[in-house]
Image 1 (tube, rainbow, N blue to C red):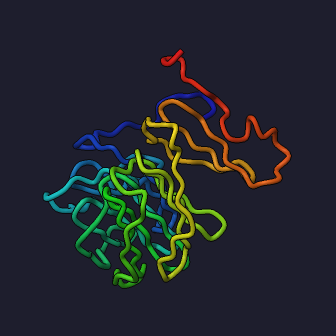
Image 2: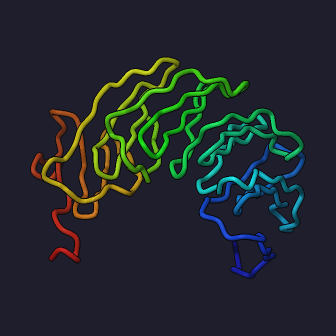
Length: 231
């Protein structure tokens, strides 16, 4: 990082979409990457492949994996969800059903994932057994990552608004909101800035805050009215 000099380079044997993760839970720090139908661990200092495990050829691993700090990596694809050891030595459990694009969320021993059609599945992190399955109003295609904050999970649909559910062992829909005057897509993952939720569509950038916030109310709802392409 001091000089920008390349230290190593690898050929990941197939292209992929998922962001890589770093795990410090095995005997050595590993760069965990998915490419096509495989997941592999590489030594972060040398780039050498330490382990490689096939995930099955029936579906592609599109999204980022999840590591929880307890030596387990969770991965999800269209037709399955799996938990494996960070050192690649063992698949702990494998269950049918999964998500195409949005990544997993882990909290309090539970794994949450959202399918393309807005079906939320909560699984026990140790066994993989389902805790609940439920559909949220913000169904349709979902590209944005679900995010967790203040005991809630926010799920953003491309066309059908944002659903807020409780982060717990039982499904509870807390809110569902849509922007009726914005017919464009919402593909970007939301973000929090203090007490404000930042949402971006193809046309607008929104800042959603609580009633009574000191921010100028005219700018609170919509930070940016049109993109350059709409000007």
